[in-house]
Length: 131
Image (tube, rainbow, N blue to C red; front, side):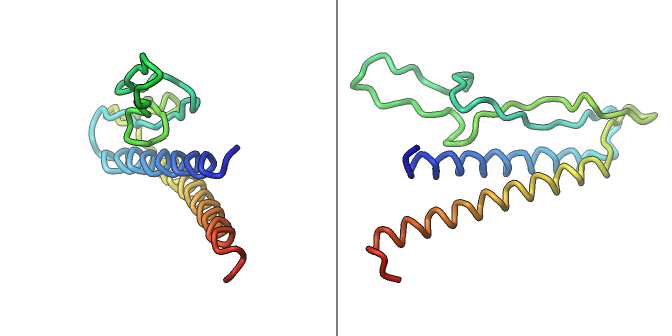
């Protein structure tokens, strides 16, 4: 794997975790909304051509359409089927959502650290080993 591909892959992972954080935060915001079903994001394979905005490359001279999500990780929103409903039909469990937020934060932070280290190595290599 080339260096820029690894950084791009980590960037997509960070974007996925940022978007997932927003989705889970939306669940928490709707804690008291009757009938609300919690949502989550599911990561799709990196080579999935399921992105709605993706343009087909029909000629070798065309520029690649990229992923339709502005460089983001391919993901789809799903309804959290494991959630139990309360009397008013709301299925948000604050403890479960907070646990998902925390796990997502750890993954984002770890990926961010990896990106920082990879870029530091690139800086070091570009400067011929001079600090």
